[in-house]
Length: 155
Image (tube, rainbow, N blue to C red):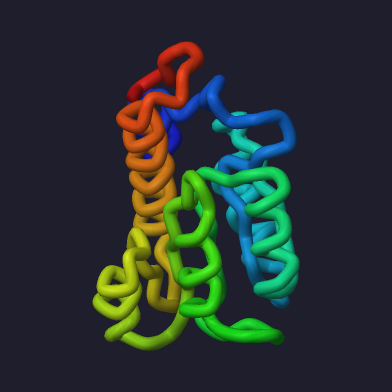
């Protein structure tokens, strides 16, 4: 049923993403997060990129671009709020989703300008819905700022 919902909402790659950009960038020193997300979104055609530290994630976002960043609450070289501050400086900041264990995390992330938070234990439906919603929101925002190019499907 979830796969059908993704097809209906047309989560194909947006032609506006520059070459090398990721639809979803993970920032986690735990490799299972990236593998988990790649498996969930395998049928979408999205590019999922993985980095292991805040510094590497910010370098990827700055140099290549990303629509959505899924970041662990705690990173080897900082925390999610460090990533949020650095992403906010980009010309077209990606939607930020934070993964952690604190029930208050969604409120904190929203207050810092992030899109949302996913609290462990993760539920597949929540993960897919949140990331797809963030992706669509980023695409709509990009259209609103007049980035040019062809319209994105489903936007």
